[in-house]
Length: 194
Image (tube, rainbow, N blue to C red; front, side, top):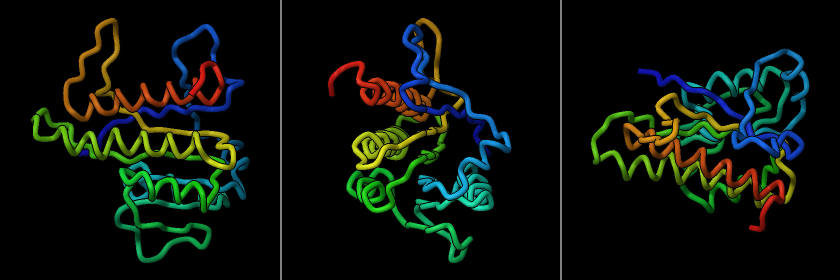
C-alpha cells in the first residue's frame, strides 16, 4: 500500500514568515521550476522509494546533477545520476554525502512507512523516520556550501490541532521530524543561537 504524502519545503530565510508559526511552503511542479534546476547539484535521500524513484528520473531528465542515496541502488541509471548505497540513519555517512557532493538542493524522502499501531514498530520508526530526518537536516545545516532548498516528505498521518496525538509510531516520528525541520529553519535563519 502506498502512503499518501504531503510535501513541504524549507526554503531560504527570505521565505521565513516572521509572524506565523507555519514555517513550510508548498512546492509545485511547474515547468519553469524544473528548468531552474538544470545543472544544479541535488541530493535525493530515499531515491529508490515510491516518491524518490520518479523524482530522481524527472530531475535527471531536467539536467540536474544528482546524488541518489538509497539502501539498494539500481545497477544502471542516467549518466547524470550518481547512485550511492547508504543508510540515512548513519550520521557519518550523511555528513560525508554533504561534504563530498555539496548539494544546492536536498530532497529527504526516506521512510520506514510502516503505519501499523504496534509498539514493536517504535525502534524502526525512530531510526528510519526520525533519526534519518535529523541526520539529513544536520548535514544541510552544517554543510560547507549553502543548501538553497530543503524538501521533506510528510504524511497525512501527522497529527495537528490544539492537542495533537499521533496514531502510530510512524506518525509520531514524522511529526517529530517536522518539528526538527522547523527548529533547523529557525537556526539557519539566525533567529536564535545554535
